[in-house]
Image (tube, rainbow, N blue to C red):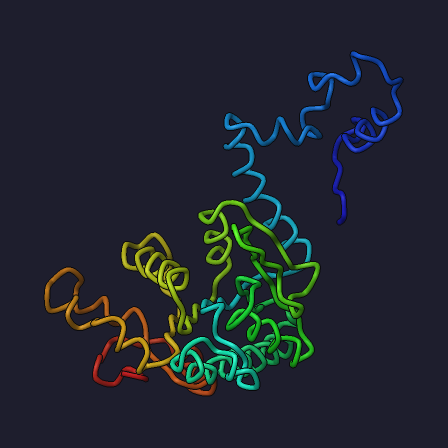
Amino acid sequence: MTEHRNHPFRRSGQDREAVSHVPDTPQTRAPAYRLGFADEEFLCRDELRPVRLQLELLKPEMLLDEEGVDSTIVLFGGARIPEPAKKDTARTETLAELTEFYAEAREFARLMTLKSIKDSGGRENVIVTGGGPGVMEAGNRGAIDAGGRSVGLNIVLPFEQAPNEYVTPELCFNFHYFAIRKMHFLMRAAAITVFPGGFGTLDEMFETLTLIQTGRMEKVPFLLFGKDFWTKIINWEALSDAGTISAEDLDLFVMVDTAAEAMDAIANWEGVGEKRGEVPGR
C-alpha cells in the first residue's frame, strides 16, 4: 500500500511499533494504556460501531482506488451451484440442472474481462463477486481464464467460509456488515448480473432494483440470467397487474440465458425498455 503524506507528523505505525518495546509494568499492561487505534477490544465495543462502519466503507474504497479499479461488473448468484463437472454432488436435481449457469457465469466473466483489458487495460468493468463458491467462484474463475483480475467481497458467516481461490488476492476483502458490503457492490457498478440463487441473491437483487426504481441509483444494464428460473420463482407480471409496481418497472431489467446474450444486451442497453415487446430476453 502506498502511503500518501502531506504533513510532518510522526507516523502512527511508528508509535504502534514503539509501544511494543516499552518496559513491562502494571501500567503498560493495563488496557487503558493501549493506543486507541491499536486496541482491538476497544474497537469492538458497541459504542465504536460507527467507527467500524466507517472503516469497512473506507478500506475497500481506498484500496480499490490504489489498485486502479475504476468500474465493475457485478455478479450476484448462488453459492450452492456447483461447476458442471461436479453436478453429481448437487443436493437437488434442480441444482444439478443449474450448473449450466456456473458455465455461463464463467464465460461471461471471461468475455467481459477480455473486453476490459482491451478497452481500458483492465481498469474498467472489472468483475466483482461475493468471493464465495458457486456462481461467485465461476465469475472470479472466468476473469483468470482471460488473464485478468477480479474483486471478491467476502463476508464472515456463522459457518466456515473462505474466499474462493480465483479472487485476485490484492482485491479480496472481508466484511462484518452486510449493508456496507452491498454498498461496495454498487458504488462502482457499470452493470448488474443476477444468476439463480437463494435468499442472499434475492436480497441483493431486490435491494438494487429498489435503489434504481426510486432514483437512488443510476440506471445501469441489469440482467437476470435464467429466464425459466426467474419466471418460475417470481411472478413479475402479477406484481404489475396488482399495481404494487408500475408496468414500467419491468423494464428495469432484461432476462438472458447465455453469456453471448448478456454481452449483446449490455452493448445495446441504450433505449432498452422503450418498446417492451422488443426488449431482448422478454
